[in-house]
Length: 394
Ligand code: C5P
Image 1 (cartoon, helix red, strand yellow):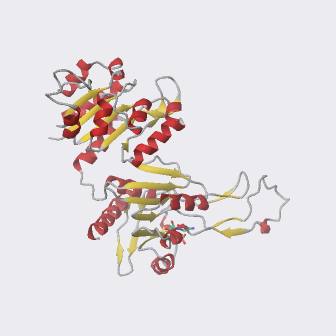
Image 2 (tube, protein in one colour):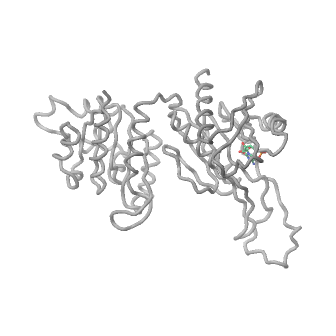
């Protein structure tokens, strides 16, 4: 039986942790509840004990308890720790290594993976102090589940709601059940289009939806990888466990990709705009006043080729080639020219942009693997497995 240590923080969303405990217990997990002092203002120990079927731990120095089970024993017995809801205060104490109550002492002593499901007011979430704490915790491989966006208990709207209960359970179970062959591997994924401004209202871009790149980022994260997703403007939700960096232009995308290095692997799915206007006009260009043939375009940097030649080049670099004719010939040539290991070719004439299906061939310099038409999520899952097999052979 797997043991989940559930640390309940003091926020209005604390009542939702009871439902999480109930559902996890029903699935056969042993739930060991720990409550902070402020959690007790929102939910009662009695309810928590009744739903978890286990005694609540809350005192760091409890006479009579120490010989039975102390904080070190609690930290050791957990297969996973879920902090839910994680308040701004709890995140701050975790980030700074405080151990001033039982919950934070366990978190400091724990070896098990830590999952936090934050819930707080949007302004508290967005505050630079909270964001800095989150960045620190992520560096230390604390897994964040959410928060979600929506209306808050206080009436504000924004990021800061507790993630849906199903998502929290799904992430925890994904971790407890699945092997994580890409654990400790970092992947850089680019996705979506780039937008190159001409003037304040116009830009050069393309039809990329970001669906394939987002699906790949999600599939890699599901295999345990740490994923940095550098994304052009798309209207897609960030996949769970993926660190997303938003960019607009190709040059911003290149900067953020370089910042994300070192990485073990890169999958360049973004449809980067090949050109940009040489000059971005600060005022809207007026009809009739401009000779449009004078709109001079210059070439954008090639992100994939730059990373392939970088001294911190990832061990595996995968590129995409969206073509409308001679797909495999162009793909072969592109693989050589860019210097990537695998090149995934797809025919975009077949309405691939915006569709949830795709048909690809993978060239690795020796052979060509052609996969049948399938959903972009299926392609992503299969590619993540292929990537994982590649790393297991290294
Ligand atoms: O040259 P083309 O745009 O067809 O190359 C496609 C591949 O190169 C994709 O993997 C794409 O993400 C990447 N690319 C890039 N930077 C560019 C152009 C393309 O990373 N400026």
